[in-house]
Image (cartoon, rainbow, N blue to C red; front, side, top):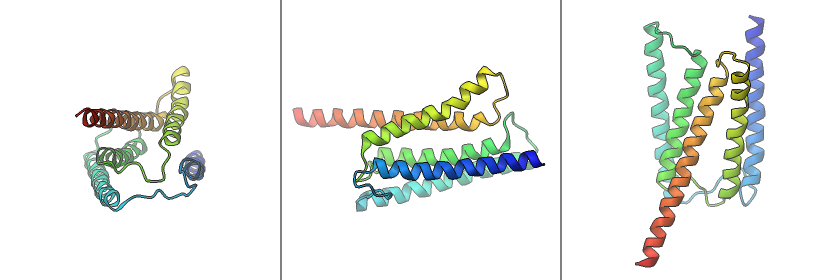
Amino acid sequence: MNGNLFKSAGVAIGILIGLILALALILIANNNRKVRSEYDERQLRVRGDAYRYAYYSMIICEVILLILSIGEVTLPVPDYVLHFGGILIGCLVLSTYCIWKDAYWGLNNNRRRYGIILVVAGLLNAIPLFGALSHKSTLDFPYVNLLTCVMLLVVGAELLLKQFLDRRAENREGNA
């Protein structure tokens, strides 16, 4: 019991430190050094839709987990990893919708700085994976890091693909 309490407290403290670090990085990454990103009216409308779709996707994930729990279906990963996966699916839905509807980047965002932050976040989340694999321990807790790395890779790939397609379209318009 005490071990789980300390583990939960450690996770809570880690999340708090992560949030403080995220706020500091946002201050650095935004051109005007504000915490909030600024969006035009169209972007705000699109982001509202994206938040709604992300919310629905998280609810669907939780309903699936509820059904599995009621049916006493056990999976080879801890429940907290599955719930965290549901949260990441919501984040992925939000990001994906915003990326493809041109509402991901705020008017005051420095894309290069945010790109660096995404890469560093991915690398930091990969560190526990290497440690777990080298010690041949179970991947209970590092599954959270694995899921986060996958989400960051998908978002990064989408951002690069969107940038490539936008530049290609601009070049076609310029040559026409």
